[in-house]
Length: 404
Image (cartoon, one colour):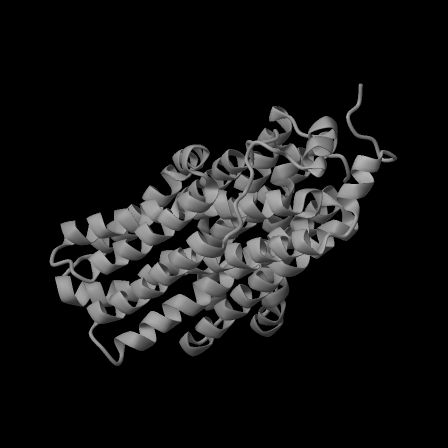
């Protein structure tokens, strides 16, 4: 016997506008966006601090890479355990505690006097940040149900804002105060955000799925479907990070000046931020598969165009390339809930983010080794070919989705 059908009063009541529920959804979205901006900002803030730490501690490039690896590695490996912890403590408490740990890690980094203590501090901060991706994205998914794709695009866009704002802020602070004081100031922001999350993030009912989730569970979702989505996400990230590895060398081979290099890369990143925002909307209009075909096909064509075109037209294409490079990710993240059993959304997001983060770390190494063998142009063409490999996976994914 079916519990709900499109014509039953229960479904009609669930779909009827509810001002209180709408207000709660909005609060979940904006607080999740705030958490995403803070944690992604903390993650990329390390890049702005590396030169300072190199000078202060006398570190070599290997040690500097270790610092970044400690944070990213801890964050990536603990996302699945963070989702499990949320089952015990609840998503709100776990996210607030994680945000507090991330902030305290940077506070301890400001007190560190050696490479070892700095690594311990960054590991603590990375441990705290491991809670954000699975729990905040899961919160948005639970709040919006089947209409979560567009809100998740806003959530992903907020992460890019944090990546831009916090590294810039700490760089500015370092010019006017000791770097340790700058870290304590940035840590204070994180402590305040943790407090706001603990007080104002609406509680999320883990054992009472919504009508939308029940309907979704009845019509979509499977382990093989999630595996296909996971593979698409890993390859999409590999394309993006592989291309960004070689793009400066491609532009340099075309004669770009050092001053213009930063501008060119900024155009890609600006386009990427816009892509995360706009392609979620595009996914709602064209469907998941149509959007993936559009963004990945355009990515492959634009990569080849940047390789073969002269410098000026290549630079003109960079913002559009950024849109396509980053746009697929918003559609993929928004599809995770459709392929997830009821009550297991956080774990699915944890697995998905772990895979994409690992891909982002390993892909540049793999493409770099390939570049040593066949050259920069050949390895960059390989990234375009990887984008096309996604096509058959997307076609196989189609049958697992309620809409395409």
